[in-house]
Length: 284
Image (cartoon, rainbow, N blue to C red; front, side, top):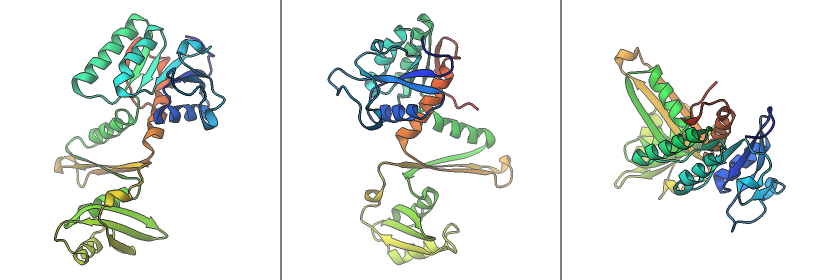
């Protein structure tokens, strides 16, 4: 492993949306530096925009100094790419979304390789898997007895969108607030009346006292900002958890930006880890 003791040199392997987000984040990071980008031989030889002065190579060995590699390739290629990097005794960070037996096998293969080649890897270092599971686990530790509700929504007013979607007669909803007025776009169930939905919405505690305009649309999903995502995480306690115990998290974000930040966080951790593959965890 090479590079300075104060600033880790990180190579980005793959330059799709995730790889681009990682590379751009590295340009602005005070602890990590962008050592270069590894792309397929048939990909363009230069990176676009702010990355145009970054070295673009076909193999990580062509870069002069690399301390850690961020694997940003499709899920089907992630195991083989990470394995090849570990065989070169290069620490690896990846965030592949796998489930069940595929995830177990992926982790085991990387753990075996990292131990054999006396290096380390951080797996599942993204938004989900990764940072999101840490939020869920912390809510469930704080309220050990209760119900966890997760809802995905577009990057607008998430909790209000969820509340509007729960109104009788509404199939889907999208809410945004502009200049103190809430605009609610509802996709109605068959046979539902807009005026009845307006009345129910006006009686909801989340909308009481705030000017609200309600509009019927054919497809609420068509209004989503597809570049951004959002989630609502709610943990509702039982009586045994204490009176009215509840936690609520509302998040709006760009999925690739958040995954990149988690990968950079893992890259800062990887040098101090024992040999082997380690599940990503948020740390202070």
